[in-house]
Structure formats: C-alpha cells, structure tokens
Image (cartoon, rainbow, N blue to C red; front, side):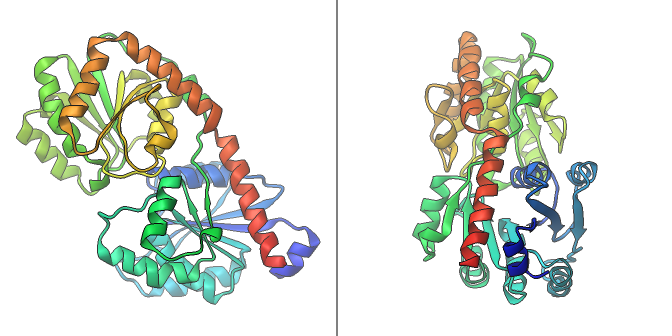
Length: 374
C-alpha cells in the first residue's frame, strides 16, 4: 500500500528516525525517547544509524524497535547513499526525520529522490562558530531536500533564519522533554563532603570545558574539599585530560566517561555547571532540573528558555570569573542549593515532560502528513 492509499485508509504512519550514531548525547537520547514513547497505534517506527549503533541501541532492543545500521566507513563512503536507497525502497516511509548534520547530509537527498512525502531536518543549535563548510553543505546539500525543519529552541530558529533563507512557515520548535520520574526518585542525596561539581555532556568544543577547568583551578584552592566530575566522552577527551594536568587540577577532576546511570550520579552531585559556548535545549540541564540540582549555566542558545534567574545562576559565556562567583555563591550559602533546586524541579515538571514532547511530535508528524494529502 503506497503513502496516499495508507493515508486515505487511516493506517499507521511509517516513521523513520535517522541519527549518526546512538552513542550517548542529547539528540540521541531525544530520538530514543521518541522511538520508545510515540504511540504504537499511530506509528510504525524504524531507527537508522548512519555510522554505528552505540550504547542506546539496547534501549531500542528492549522496546522491540527495529534498528538498521548503514555502517558508513570513513568520512565520505559514497556507498552509504546506495545502502540508504535500498533501505527506503524496502521500508517506504511516510516520514523521515534526520537528526543532526551527518544524518541530514546522507539521508535527506536520498529521501528526496525516493519521494518520501515528509522529510524533516532536526537542528539542535546554530552557531557562528561552526565551520563555514557546514553552513555551505547545509545550504546546498541538506535544506534543498528537506520540506520541514524542527528546532529545539526559539533561539536556534532565530539564528537559523539569520543564516539561511528557508520559509519560516516550514519550521517548528519542539522543545526537548525527559522522563521525570527516574530523576525525581533517584534514590539519594549528596553528602556534606566532598562538594561535587558535575559537568554532563559530550567532550567537544561547544561545551567550553576549558572555561570550567580554569574556574575550578581557583575553586579547589579556596575549597580543597571540592571535586569536579566530567561525565561524557568525545573528541576532546585526551586534550582535556592534558589540560587538567597542566592546570594542576587532575587529582580532584574525575573523568567518568560515557555513562547510562545519570540519575544515580546526579543524586551525588551538589551543583551542575554548564560553561557551553552555544547550546540548543540541553538535555543534561533538564535532567539536572528534574533531579532538583543547583545549576550554574552560561546564558547561551536555548538555555534561557528553560532556566531563569529564579531557579539558576546564569552567567555570560567565556567568563571563568563569573563561573567562580556562581559556584562560590552556592558553596558559601548552601541553603540556596535546595531553594534553587526545588524551583528548577518545579519548572521542568510543569513545562518539559516527555509526555508534552511526544504529544508535540505526534501532532507535528500527523499535521505534515495531512498537508501532503491536500
């Protein structure tokens, strides 16, 4: 049964979610949430990874979600286009939703050639720090083949509109949401000592770890009973380990790697810090909010859309002194940790639940299919 016949018959829609890998990251977790929580009565879901699977694949397997891996080798494996072409011929999806640049680059041109009715490009953030080649490829090799673009924040959409000429009517903001219960009931609270500061996220340039390291260099002198936990992995791991040694903070800085037990780790952390240069709607901060954590974060991208001065300490980017001041405020006034943490928890529960996000995505997918039928 082809797309129009399925639509007229009211059959379930075939949704193909595409991502570079299923290694732990914000976009990867959101895709996994969509795949495992979207209504099975309305959608048949298949997940496609461009390069490799990753640790989050186990969650798909547990929920009996089909996963296909294209096994792209090297930077430009042209056979990837052929593999994707065969996949789309086999599946005949109604909707392709490509998350992040790599998935958009490989999947959307093939989806266009195969006449997939709804072709969505999912963007986390738009930064003027991205390489010029990324903007050129998005402009000429991704956006011409997408008929809708989804952003996680209004900030990302506004930045996108400044860089690209793409009809605003064909864009939508769907803010990230998370499963709140596992963070609300995480089974513990931090002890009085040591004071644990936590950074959660991919080890890449966007996260600005070097700013946090410079701040912690002073914090550990003023308060020797502090530790800095770095949770996540990525291309800067070895560089950051070297920087920690250079700054003399390696003994109190723990690189914990890629972890799936985030709720348990958050239960032991006093304060979550984010020194990002740019962001979308960071899942790690939503999880910190749901855990009732005190937060110091840079006022960049979509961060002010989830946090305000009533529930977190927001600081300028690239400012170690401001980060030091924020951390010291919590250390010197420990009652603020509980006050800000409770306010953050109340906000995330009211506005950023996984149920709200899934409802928004289901509505968007159904509306776009309806528009194709008209």
